[in-house]
Image (tube, rainbow, N blue to C red; front, side, top):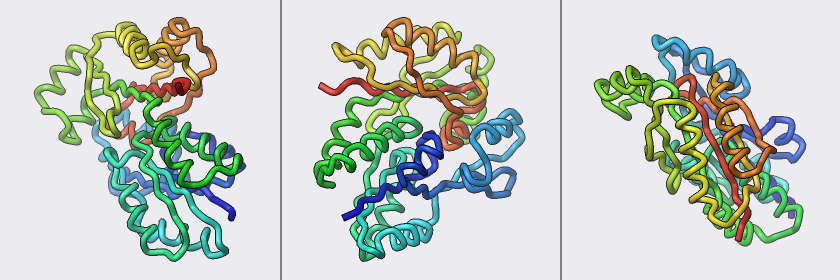
Length: 281
């Protein structure tokens, strides 16, 4: 039986790679000053970041509609194919829950997985699922292996400007204004799919140093298998972090990209995300 992967628009993987491997995308949407755009179809991550520079822009993100998932699942399974559908963390969006609901409304076999991640943290899971399907592993085995893989992924987010967190109600206005004044850069990490702030740095260099230190504890005796750094108009910051992590762990093969609007909406311009997959023990 043929198995087809479905995901959403937040993996930051190259669209040509997804197309080559027949990975179908059900996109999220972004709303800019009341006008809606389909993520990665009607607006790119790079173009979206430009709107973040103006604090007066009203920016929102929304999950795919239930009907889009139902249509996709029905079309892919009508000839007997099976679907493995994996999506950004349920702690960041309702997309996973919507996919589960849609899977229960179609006759075909659809297995839905919560990646508990986003950007390349989701992307690396997709890449492994492609490999495991090619190897002929049963779907149940693939699901188990994905859950194990998730334990070997660490994702950090460094906030660029606190204004967006203030607007989203994630921090108080007073705390956010003080943080901006002091140029504090909060560092968050995804824990079981939920973003938690674990540190604050005053400079990009100090932030890069902290990330390398925390990664040392995460990696233990393991080596880096894959690593990615994504950004929201922060190429200089990206290079500093890449240099520090590369030098610390003797690693150079980084994936880089503009980050998904689903992250940059909340982090603001100047933010970066760091994803590390360690060799599995």
